[in-house]
Length: 157
Image (cartoon, rainbow, N blue to C red):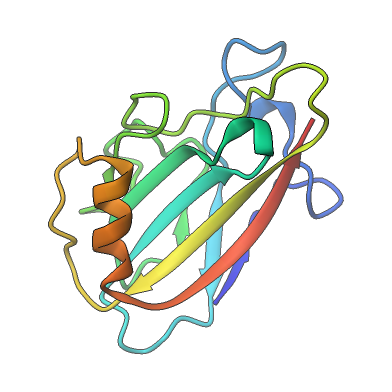
């Protein structure tokens, strides 16, 4: 699968608009993500955004499940607004105890952080998880049903 984020500058840097609301210029807006080359038996998708920097210890900034198999994008600013998210999808609790996208907020002097966006094509719909499932529970259930996955790296410093 191929993932695309049209707002990345130089094809890899996330603009400040998409960072944590408390940062200068940060609006906490979820970025638009689209995808193609989907396996034909896909029933649903799951999307994760994880900070790969060692200081962040794999913090999940966004975890969405039950995205319908016919969907090919999540629009900008969709997170946290039920009517903007793909019908039937559910945002799980992230590492910041929110059921929404939380933008990057790297610690000062830690350099660039890489945020790995991963889209999983799944052979089930829905994943039977509640909105407060732990990251461990969600990841374990997700792994049982993966057909394919695609990744996209976003950088922010």
